[in-house]
Amino acid sequence: MTDTNLTDVATLAAIPAPPTGLSLADELDRRKNAVVGGYRILSAFGLDEGISGHITCRDPYDPNTFWTAPWGRHFSLVRPEELLHVDATGRILPDGGRGRLNRAAFVIHSHVHAARPEVMGAVHAHGLHGKTFSALHRPVSPITQDSCAFHGDQAIYDEYHGVALLEEEGERIATALGPHKAVILTNHGHLTVGTTVESAVWWFVSMERSMQSELLALAAGDPVPLDPQTAAETYAAVGGEDVGWFAYSTIIQRIARHEPDLFGHWLQAHAGE
Image (cartoon, rainbow, N blue to C red):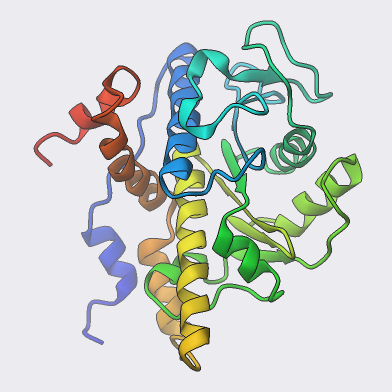
């Protein structure tokens, strides 16, 4: 390793930061748009399995409420005006869309948002590699640069009590998550959170891909992880919230070309960069 360690690289890379100082109305629009974009991204990665999966964003006016897609709406078709506004009791508020609320979405996300006031977005879906890896009851290992984003920043919920329909299950998941960006729900899948919706979405995709990579490595042989110091330094470069937000902004550009009415601002924001 050179004299410039990987922690310094995070600063040298000059990662852009998400916008700040928006009005509450503009911030709500931004978060809802990011939720819809997140559903599109999950669909593009093949992470839309039947009626399973949900993305939420915290409401900036009333932080004890959140927004999510109506249950049964395909990820690729969700629009901002359709998002349900849900309070802490599971009631659908009149200023949002109409439709069914996924009970598991409420149970899990309401407790995660309540336990982590800094979290603005949370993501859970049933990706093939995520649910397969979760059966191993182990954390993602730092065997690649990308998987180092979760080094020391993931937890394991080492229980399974069936579909998350009871409040107690949401509490247990939120407790297991603790202060981390991700929790592996054994025999189920994984859940990620972020200080922006965008970062939460990217962490979900990145963890799914890291799980896929590790499953392939395990099938091929005995993968060798990075040493703890290098993994920690790499985490400092690739595991920050601004990195997650910026990574989302690159993926959404491809989708924006097909739906410029919803996501065209992402193309304009990064034009010429």
